[in-house]
Image (cartoon, rainbow, N blue to C red):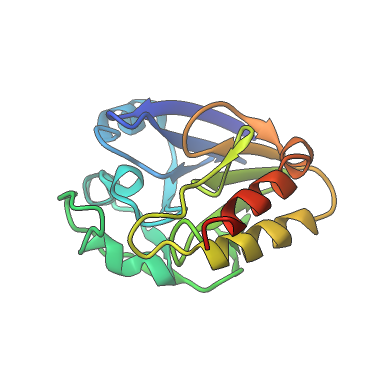
Length: 201
């Protein structure tokens, strides 16, 4: 697996190109991502969204139409692609595949799992490919996603964090913002964050 990373836009949202067996999968094409994607793919097969916030989906429409590849989005965040809850105006996009919670998919022979961890958004998911988690805005290095936005939920975030603590094995985490980390490293600080969230709900 080869992973290319480019932070995009004012929020420095990580856009990823994941190449497995010669197939390029684009994860979270944010603001201004299109040209970088075009310059760095040779065999694009899909666009995947970890969740529906504007800074992760801004270039969905342009990349999809330019490359003529399908868009996958978690079902509970699909509404955000046409009605941004954060007051922004990204180009509206329509998913070709609405992903069910914790759904496992095979795209062009590449096995992918959307692990559902709501809280930051209703559909917030980690995209698992082999031993890597593209964790969107659920888990960051030593931190977690905000739970105070419209359609966020502190109660759901606590349950998701507790669920993440039960995952066995280790994964390399590539988050929606900032540097990569590992699941084991973050599991050590998740109990702290559970208590922080509980104090606000």
